[in-house]
Image (cartoon, rainbow, N blue to C red):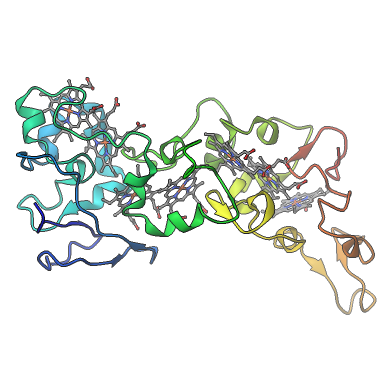
Amino acid sequence: MTTRRLRASLFGLAAAGGLVLSLMSCSTTPLGVAEPPAIPGASFVGNKTCQECHANITRVFPTSAHARIYLEGEQRAGQTGCESCHGAGSLHVKGGGGRGKFIVNPGKDPAACLQCHLAQQGEFQLPQHHPVLEKKMNCVQCHDPHGSDIFKRASGLAMARLNENCAGCHREQTRPFVFEHPALREGCVVCHSPHGSINAKMLVQPDLNLCLRCHAQVQGPSVAPGQVYIGNVNHTSFIRMGACWSSGCHTAVHGSNVDVRLRY
Ligand code: HEC
Ligand code: HEC
Ligand code: HEC
Ligand code: HEC
Ligand code: HEC
Ligand code: HEC
Ligand code: HEC
């Protein structure tokens, strides 16, 4: 077991026997190389064996981003994804399965995810972050480790895909408004870093640049030099007062029930 390394690879590169490697995923985020949870005396049986009793999971798993995980050096390369996270399954299967029976359930423990997703650990240590490492919430409230959509959906809300999940905990920002802010249709993540950020409220940018990505600032020959127009309104003196939302102007950035200009 100690020489066997778990390897996350997209490309099925030839095995480099037992070396500790750090591989790059297609998003160029380095993925750590970890060992599967140890289950003394058990051997690897492959995903197909799990199908018999966990059809609901094995049915959706091939379309998951996690279907790309496999154990390096195993005969069944490409088929050992389940056991990468749950440990070798032979004793669990032989005993007819069951909870706590020779199988590891990582449950809500973020450590199980972070051993491969090293880069995300740092994000949760930024000054503003979702309290995952503090164990007040967990990765699997937002991510589905098995399903075709790694971003977990909450039910019933007609918001953009990514927002549905946020809505489960942040109703105030996701309820319907008389004057909606179309920015939210592109997902909460256009303005917020979902794991953590150095900026207050986990914003992706701390100042008016957050808004100017979509609300082009006009400055040039058509307007007097030095004048700044946003949405056909002269903002020259306004933008000296602070960020668009904290200066008292567009306080209701998520939507307003009283003012089209997004105010409370
Ligand atoms: C013979 C049937 C059977 C097979 C085959 C089987 N399991 Fe299970 N497994 C069960 C049963 C029954 C449970 C109890 C929970 C349930 O009913 O879903 C369970 C529970 C689990 C749990 C949760 C354990 C816990 O402590 O909460 C995991 C994880 C698991 N199985 C993974 C696997 C994996 C991975 C495979 C393939 C290597 C596999 N199982 C193959 C029957 C089986
Ligand atoms: C990337 C890691 C990962 C992979 C790969 C993975 N699982 Fe899981 N699995 C988890 C985590 C995390 C949980 C706990 C989820 C939770 O508590 O919400 C879990 C929970 C389970 C459970 C228990 C569900 C319950 O009712 O409590 C079963 C059964 C299971 N997995 C089977 C499988 C099978 C079968 C495969 C392969 C088709 C697989 N898993 C692949 C991480 C993984
Ligand atoms: C054994 C290593 C391993 C473990 C453990 C693991 N992952 Fe992954 N994860 C991967 C690989 C490999 C990919 C695919 C990477 C890619 O496509 O760039 C992936 C992809 C993802 C993605 C999608 C990334 C993207 O760019 O679209 C998310 C989200 C994710 N994992 C979350 C989790 C969570 C949450 C857990 C814990 C329940 C977890 N992972 C556990 C290896 C792992
Ligand atoms: C509050 C919900 C939430 C929690 C909690 C959360 N994530 Fe994410 N995660 C997201 C969203 C939303 C994205 C998509 C970001 C984007 O598209 O810009 C994402 C993206 C990712 C990605 C893809 C690469 C990236 O950073 O964009 C990985 C890998 C990932 N998460 C892993 C994890 C792990 C591991 C944990 C727990 C330690 C975790 N996430 C906890 C919401 C969450
Ligand atoms: C499982 C519940 C849960 C989900 C899902 C969730 N959050 Fe959170 N969120 C929290 C908790 C808990 C806090 C910390 C609150 C505190 O510290 O007072 C928080 C804090 C925040 C904050 C900072 C609030 C402040 O006043 O500083 C922002 C912004 C935020 N979340 C955005 C999001 C976005 C965007 C999503 C979807 C990608 C999301 N959340 C999904 C539970 C959740
Ligand atoms: C157009 C950019 C933008 C989008 C899109 C956006 N937010 Fe915000 N959000 C902000 C700004 C700016 C603040 C800071 C407001 C303040 O400090 O007064 C904020 C603050 C928050 C807070 C802290 C509490 C509060 O209202 O001040 C939460 C929670 C939050 N947002 C959740 C969400 C969720 C959930 C979504 C998706 C439905 C979302 N946000 C989409 C810009 C945005
Ligand atoms: C992802 C793109 C996007 C981002 C980022 C964004 N907005 Fe918007 N916003 C829109 C769109 C689209 C509209 C509707 C069309 C329009 O009025 O330009 C809109 C409309 C508005 C309106 C209503 C204008 C009117 O008179 O009807 C205000 C006010 C506003 N946004 C303020 C902000 C503020 C403040 C921020 C930064 C916190 C921001 N927006 C960030 C896309 C965005």
